[in-house]
Image (cartoon, rainbow, N blue to C red):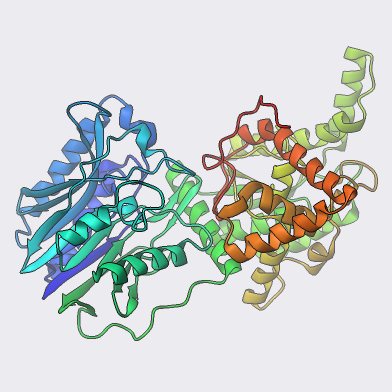
Length: 565
């Protein structure tokens, strides 16, 4: 029998001392459970992903010093094996670093395995820093059990779909009793199910039980959901750790089966979250960790009385607490009565203060000064955008004066087509809903009300026709197709085959139906052009919390100055 502690922890990138302390604490719990092996996630010592911190002078010296702290701590728990992820130096040709798993016990390094498959796609860029490890399998005998060891991507290519090398096949040939995979797998809609499918299939194909240990927490744009799991060849997934939370759990591995420390595991694994609840929990954790790691306790949101700012405020309250969130309403000449009154009702429901800062006078003064300086009237888009930029300036001034994190409120539909004002409503430190299409913004807002059993977001906001309120009688529909139409086209053009198959087929069929006639085809091409023309805005916008398989940011890299036929 082997006792294994899966340590699913929330690390901070670059906080080597803090990460080492968390790992030692988890190892002590494992030792108290009389575990034989404690397993940490991929690059647990640095957290995933340190990016170009790896190249900073002295960083690897600090990594090595922190690793020696872990080695020293292991001497105090001499019976416990530690599986640790970290970057190490690499001598010889190629990159100067490797992504490595080391097993230590009693102050000694017993095994080192270097990751073979280095993802360099979507949000990943490991080949930028690391040299691939050799095509070998590493197996360690612990209490009579042959334990094979893999690192994340090495276990994702069992059908040889992405790489010529298949580390799982090599691992099978080494005949382990159990495979342990350490991971840093970022979360997006459907990702949990994809992990279960891929590793469940590999477990059945090779007849190997697998323990999959992931990290948890928000790191800039990415959120890691944890959800570590154990899978058996016949039974499939038999254990899953908590989602969006730390979880340090000791399991028994006996006769090819995973068991709870004190008996049998629960008869079934919890079902996956519905999409809307998944979005909610991912965004809340992403904001909470982003604010904490960047030194913010409080947040401020410009409250327009519209659905986007309402949802952003509601999610901020859930993440940070009502006492740490402030709304600001900034009416202009063109603001409707509901812009203020609906904001007041929303903030009452949420229990947050709403500050009032009218901008009509500031806009009027600016336009007069503009006309005097340039002998030209400020009108049209220039005047509309001025209002957004004045509001953005007010919000940034508040952030600078009181230390609040400014949350931008743009959704994916508007960001896609540039229906936003750079240096205006794009101002901020983080976007919460920038990976949600407008139709999803409405759906998630209704979901918050339904799960709360009360009206958090007022019905008047849910019923209101979307408008930027930057010109008399302005509506989004004056400039954009209806959002259900726009969102279906955007999904296909931006995410394409990264969509779940049913969603992809639905979007494809819809767009093909549009392209069947000249008017519809022209609409699709218009949307495509709007996406391309507004890349420069997205490049200068704050990071957004990723919830879908392809989000704006590091996972979508396109040139600004490019010809697109």
